[in-house]
Length: 159
Length: 159
View 1 (spheres, chains in turn red, green):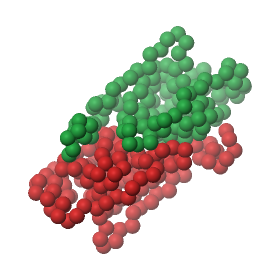
View 2 (cartoon, helix red, strand yellow; view 1 turned 30 degrees about the vertical axis):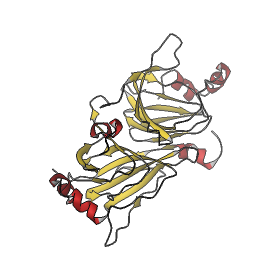
View 3 (cartoon, helix red, strand yellow; view 1 turned 90 degrees about the vertical axis):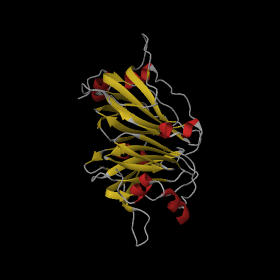
View 4 (tube, helix red, strand yellow; view 1 turned 60 degrees about the vertical axis):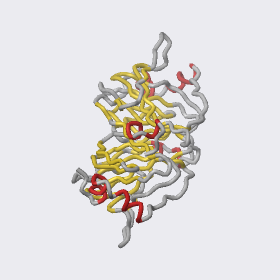
């Protein structure tokens, strides 16, 4: 093995632990304030090697938690890793479960929700260099709500 | 949703199926010949969006199967997704199990083996543009074998 710190066996082999944590990976809960557009979600960056064009992150929501409803130019390649819940993608609501794959295309509104009374976690592969997410305008969300299935999703009542 | 074929809901939501297969993902067994430096391994490319700098693939070995012992400049970011087994990385042999993380640095010999009487599968994130793998010289393998733990691994008898 090379002798750089990042190439020690301890840095190269990182064990999975109970509760979906990994050795040597920082667990970063998102700090909520009154206007937080997300709920009960945390991030762990699993891989961010500067020689790679992408990073691999693990996001997890507690039961009833949700990610931010947002869009951006960069694509997200998602695999559900833990539990089940629902995903809104454009105007489509789908139930998703462990190991299902979701592609978030450019500029497509998306949100994940842990709707099944259990935590839901997912891997997200993303370009290392990427644009910032944008939030939808209120009018756009109201238009989306005309679909009862989308409204139920946004109200945390996805069937 | 956009109306390109690649942006249909069917293309964006791909369900996980029994036996670690996914809807819309081709299962590609590697064809072995007499001199094959791998055994009983298959590949499924889960994500290969041209806008992303990396691809995410899933490799699986049957019980007693193994990947090619090789090295290359590009880095592999690996998560074990199914089962358990062993990994050789440089001169280090480690047991690995579901959801463990392994970083394969540049130019480091590596091999995965399904040593536990069950299939072992792993995700591998890799740059879309990358160099070809190189096989070690016989003399290098013989030198590695001086370590009994490495020799046992290469003989399919990792403890």
